[in-house]
Image 1 (cartoon, rainbow, N blue to C red):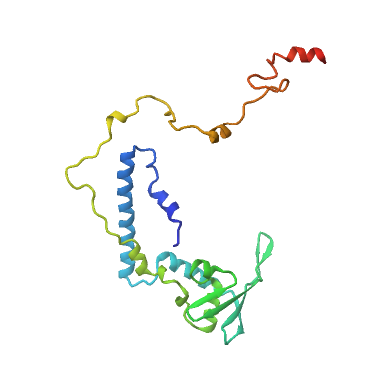
Image 2 (cartoon, rainbow, N blue to C red):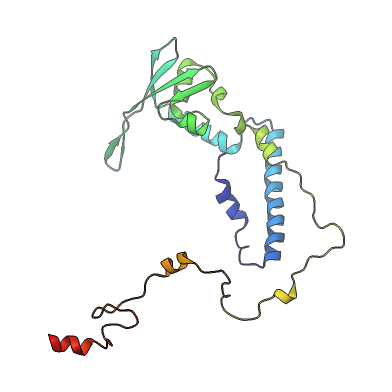
Length: 227
């Protein structure tokens, strides 16, 4: 939930795409097993140490808590637990930024904020941390349980079994090997879409027909005599 899975897995398969298909399958399997094994051991070590959150989540919380100490909090509705968070003005590249307001609401185990980060990310923003500090209440209840160390350990604790069982050996068919050099010819049936992508042939500017240009146009002499 904290990274783009497709982009993260591209790093696992880096340098594999240029290999033959049998080597790609074997390397994909071995790298995937190593990918889960390394992260499973790291998550188990954090779990045995009694950590509650993953390293990424704990690093985020430390940064946002430190940032929330610079916010000003004002109670808007004490009964409904609504708060106004004012951001201090700061200068970035000679331009004044900040001095904005956000409204957050702490409703039981659910928090909302006008920045929409708690709704999109499922963990509090710095405005919610500032409101929790003002009310002297715990903010960990607003973090989704999917980010705790138990769910992290469950993600990387998948079991793998070796597929190299028995005496069967899979080898490529030598009769299908391509001996010729260069790009293979396409055996796909061409249709109207291929003609539209190839584009229309160039036409002569004089007689408006295809097959030649204005430099070697047979009607060039007649057109020049008319002029």
